[in-house]
Length: 81
Image (cartoon, rainbow, N blue to C red; front, side):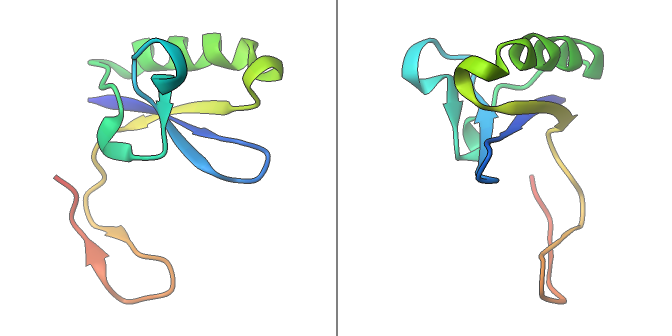
């Protein structure tokens, strides 16, 4: 599964939710809409990036789950499910 992650000019992270209206992005990764293929996620990211001037977000497609993602500044490893 794949999700869309977005960053604004300040570096704040958001995730595409698939919802309409003001809730179309969320800072909570758990709210992210999951796409079945990377190709579909990339197409959606490209479409959103076309309107970057309107919403100020830059989207990328990425894997929904990252195994053994290191936590910055520590020797702890998180396992996302």
